[in-house]
Length: 239
Image 1 (spheres, rainbow, N blue to C red):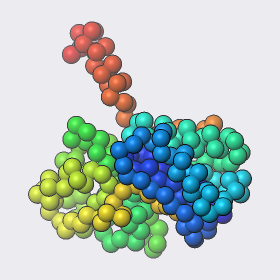
Image 2 (cartoon, rainbow, N blue to C red):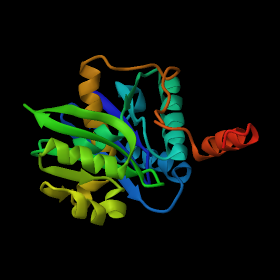
Image 3 (tube, rainbow, N blue to C red):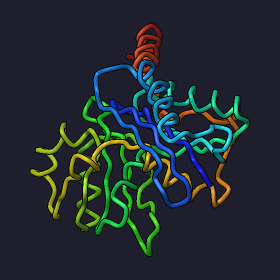
Image 4 (cartoon, helix red, strand yellow):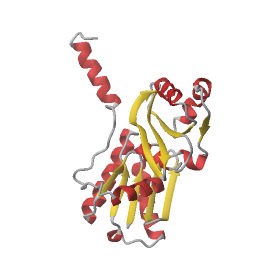
């Protein structure tokens, strides 16, 4: 089985190819360019380097959200276009699950946190049991204080990863009552290799969708939509 994976859910743009248990290629960039500029050239470079014929892949995996609204749309559109052109199934992988999969086998619980602004994070809580990732808390958008409170209730050592770490690290250290660890740089951000590896498990379970069926999971409405709703409430005298 061979999977092409894309992740443009955050600042990182990443492309990978996994065949069975082997990572054949991974190209990851964390730089201030829009993914519309980087993702397709990165895909083309990876494909050329390993002389991959795209019609030989079995599925296309994509980080399906949550994350940057623009980034998710770019990743989704790219995956859907490839799926339609190649007549291949898509596998949408929840972003926080893929982040947690970077830390496969870690003891205690793993808590990815992606900065969602306004003191909120996109997050989930995961653990590994008998070599399989278990969902303790499915991905949500939540106030960082609520996340810390829930982790303290669980009472297990926790490893944090994701771009929210640099934003909330000091608050986490001050308020956590259990042992806390932070993933090192090479495991802290989105990686398409993790998306592909987790998608391989999904593919074995038949958890695929057509390109037409796929859509990103934003978890919450965009800022523009929130502002529109607030304006409508003000106009209706509800605020």
